Length: 103
Image 1 (cartoon, rainbow, N blue to C red):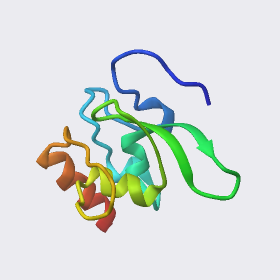
Image 2: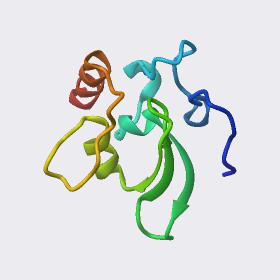
Image 3: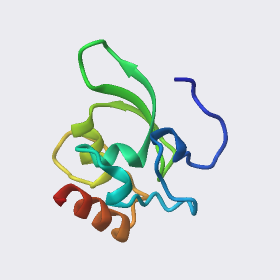
Image 4: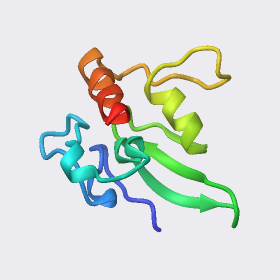
């Protein structure tokens, strides 16, 4: 998949997202066992057998290369996982993500 240019986060690549740029995703739209992928834009898969992706965070715009487990730690700001945290995730976004994971 080709990288997209521009400063605005792109929610269209996963087929779901918020038109207001908040990064919020409804659980009805999601229907995915890995809901936090909806908060990033997958740019390129790395390796044939592993789940590692080059992605851009829809919240802060930073480009990273990690697996879903590390994306989860990044977005939910879980310390002690050896992963940087997204400093632009708001408390309401974090609560929404946790709710999606519980469903």
